[in-house]
Image 1 (spheres, rainbow, N blue to C red):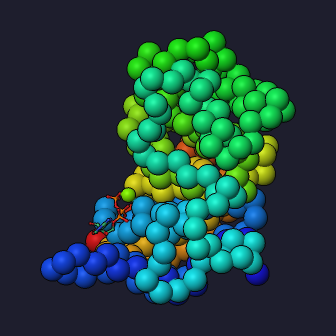
Image 2 (cartoon, protein in one colour):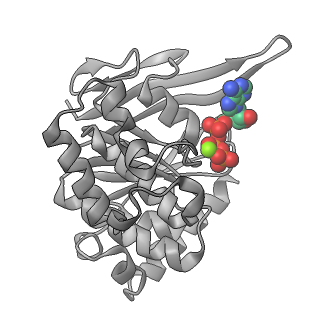
Image 3 (cartoon, rainbow, N blue to C red):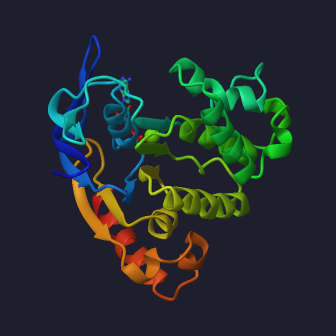
Length: 254
Ligand SMILES: Nc1ncnc2c1ncn2[C@@H]1O[C@H](COP(=O)(O)OP(=O)(O)OP(=O)(O)O)[C@@H](O)[C@H]1O
Ligand SMILES: [Mg+2]
């Protein structure tokens, strides 16, 4: 059985007046250490998929298993980074990063040192005593990533972490995040609107059709692109062909 397995997931949002099917009969798996992107039109249910995997919501039908165990509630095995960074403005960068460890009662000297090491690695060592409003958007996203990695989750869920950033910052962060996750052999599922980002960062790209989100197609990114950094991959002559085929498939589902 794969590391993460979604089996025939359907999710319906019920309100007083209506029932809205957000996800319909979605099945896919992710292997350990894989980096997978989830791509699809706005409103097709990408964030819903992440929130179901995080255990914050339960699917209306179908099952989700992580390492052969059904996910029924949030677990420390899963780190979830949302599009907005949700840093606490009254806490310093260091305090924000240590928050997850505190809440899960794992605040040992060793864990604290590891987290401060992540901060250094992200180039944020000298702002650890600053407050979030003193940082740029890209810096705040890096802090949020350190906070997500601090509890050492086995699976990372990243919901459009780069979408609010300027292009140059986004390219730099793609490289940084990719190398950090690769060296730590983390498994990750990234939600993105950006076809280029999906190709540059992933081993596989899962394309969803418009709402209700169904599996449209899975694209395997070839080894020679996967070996490159995201920035190098974007500049590879082969990149354009993959972009074109995902673009065409996406267009056919809009
Ligand atoms: N809590 C909720 N209650 C009711 N409907 C919801 C809720 N959350 C999401 N939806 C609806 O479910 C559908 C899927 O939403 P979701 O946020 O998962 O899409 P998405 O693919 O992440 O979109 P985007 O790309 O714009 O972020 C949308 O039609 C949305 O309006
Ligand atoms: Mg979303």
